[in-house]
Length: 272
Image 1 (cartoon, helix red, strand yellow):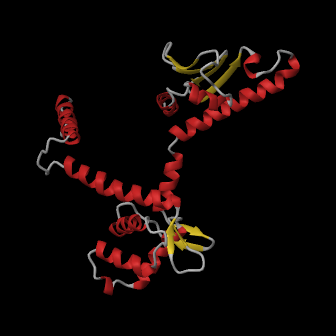
Image 2: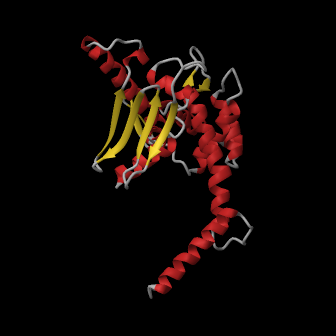
Image 3: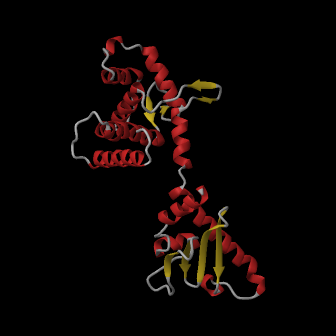
């Protein structure tokens, strides 16, 4: 069942992969306005097993969920001249290589566009404790107020080409946490800078006591802080039953869901 769901997501995410701009990347062939042939994506739903078809001139790539067990990718080259190769048997290894490379590029594109493993790995690397070269660092938990303050302050420093120091970071962080900067422990700030560095969020500027955000760290800091303040907190406020109705679509959807569940429980003579 999970494999079928995966393949349906693959289809949904790759409906435009047959466009000339995309298909030329799959087959490593330049496609121009004068290039003959059809370049398209088709989804065939004969029976209950859908299949994804990608056309390049006279070549077809077909993908389907074989026997409910595995994603199968088949490439058929019907005209070797489409790739500048003759039709003699001695050219079979070259054709095999073209087909294999096309399949591999297609799977790489689908992996990047659909597979959440990359994002999930990054999330766990941030929120879970880790050890780097014998140095241990605690996780940066998503909902922790101190972590959210750290990420919000880092977003401010992202525009400073000179980076930032322990003292500069400490002053802003204390304000974010409602503390007096003069009384915020320098050791606590050192601890936070250390775990940010070990998690790859920041790096030390060589030959200095200043730090700067890494490219990945900037994205993580912005995503974590913006998601929490602009999405999670306000939406949770909207959907809570004790909050007054405000006409938001999310609140209306959750209210309808609750009514549907209550009606189903009553219909099945269950205690809500």
